[in-house]
Length: 500
Image (spheres, rainbow, N blue to C red):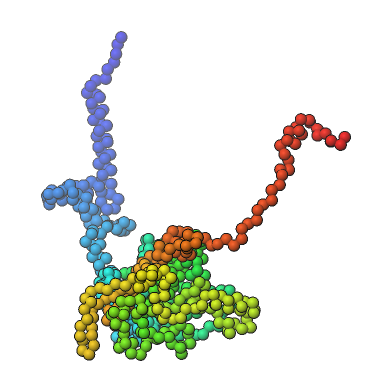
């Protein structure tokens, strides 16, 4: 059998022709110029540059060199992706931005060419921070300085009469710095009818709304004013335990249901903490009977000269509450029956009078010795609601005609962990740093039932409200179609009438 074979030289020539065609196509593709040069010229220029510079780490620098060569001959629009800054450039940019924001805080609140701007009484937080540091509380010198300048700026922008740092509420994803301020006297408002929407909010300057509050996340963030506290939200806040998230617009998911978001819950907790933990030395303030607003206090004349001694300040008898007490209704007082005469029925008036008799209002500037006095052990000198400790040098030195001490006394609330009042000499300050949650283990359960008291259970949800009426038992009826009758009926195709 004859077999034809192609000569070897013919196959080799065909293969060489195919390679030449592929190589020519590659060369043509490399030489395509899209307006900014071809890939072939770029590779040639890259190899020439490497040969001239002869870097030691050529493999590591080839990408950076290639990018630099492309940018030098690029003639089109800029790339949408900007080159990433290195660590040093990014740190310099952040530092420049921080310096610019710091300059805005340090700038004088008034125009140097205009008349000086009169500010209200702004707390000198730097001096208070030095005292608080002795008690182990502080935010660092740099953050304290930012807070002091930020408070000054807020006072200049808001036109407040007084302003101070209330504290810091910690959260799961962010924290809140809280500032407390007072505005001028507000216009008198008509008395709201009990049960109306207006009755749920106390007027500005009274009760839970005695002061106005702002919050910020810290640093150079702006201050955000919180709404007024509502009595219904304060009552609901007593029945839940919820951790703040650091976002004012977030929801409050709890049991029982809370009528509002985190902004309203934060404001309600601030009102509760202020009512219980705002302290002042005994004899420093007095009730202003001439003020048009109820529960208004003022500084006593000669209060600094008659300031309590360090020994007296180290006891609960040397301190009083400097904020109105909140009743079970969430407000500081009961409606004025004389002002409501003719607007409510006699039955409603009798009910309000009975409620006021069962839970009388507490007077201003009441001593803290009465807090949880019923839980004080017989052998103890003070109740369990407060803890007092001295820091620093406890020596007493002669200074002119009197004496001087460098002792720092801190009074901590055991009901609201994080609330503290410090005093050094004749200067005192209140501050709160905590999660905005009440202690659940300080007060024991009821002796008779063993159940936790309302508002003191450490878990969530709290004990539910008492069931007023038990539901009535359902009446049982016999089954209308017993199984036996069905079996008898299935025996015949047609049901037989028993009477026939």
